[in-house]
Image 1 (cartoon, rainbow, N blue to C red):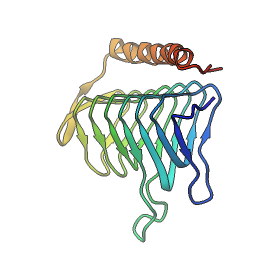
Image 2 (cartoon, rainbow, N blue to C red; image 1 turned 180 degrees about the horizontal axis):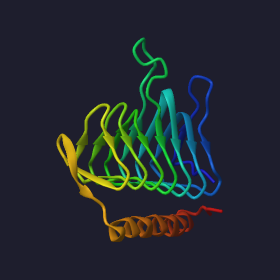
Image 3 (spheres, rainbow, N blue to C red; image 1 turned 120 degrees about the horizontal axis):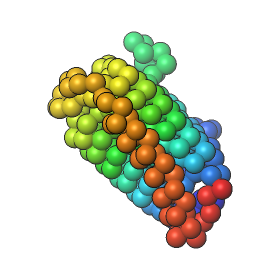
Image 4 (cartoon, rainbow, N blue to C red; image 1 turned 90 degrees about the vertical axis):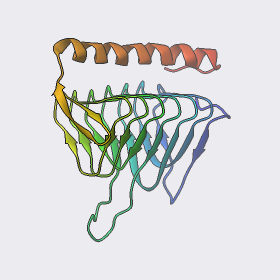
Length: 187
């Protein structure tokens, strides 16, 4: 159930498609060609604007408070433009900026990080808090990148990968609790 304090706006003939089990917190703005998967969560005061391309958020992924997600239009050099594609079980920290990028399953983007057009974070890849991933960069599977601009730091340990998956499970459970507290039910 989408609450009245969430803005869901069709744009350009395309309306957001939100799975009934997803949690969308009060204050969110979701515009245009957006798809949000099962048990995903979009936390308080996020903006997801897919007015010039599409945005996909996979199952059980979470978009934490204050995050902004946009995409980029096609142009002569980039005929498909830059959609923002987020896989399953992805953790996106508070106040993140995602723009025209791809984050594969189990990726992680830390607090206040920025990911720009054409960037890819492969499965189990991590961008550290506050980092800036400049256009076209690719974080490999199981790699940690950090800094402004971000550079490779090290490979992630099995323990770090397990911690990320615990975070996914925590956000799925926490979203259910917030849905109940906000008078909605997540299926």
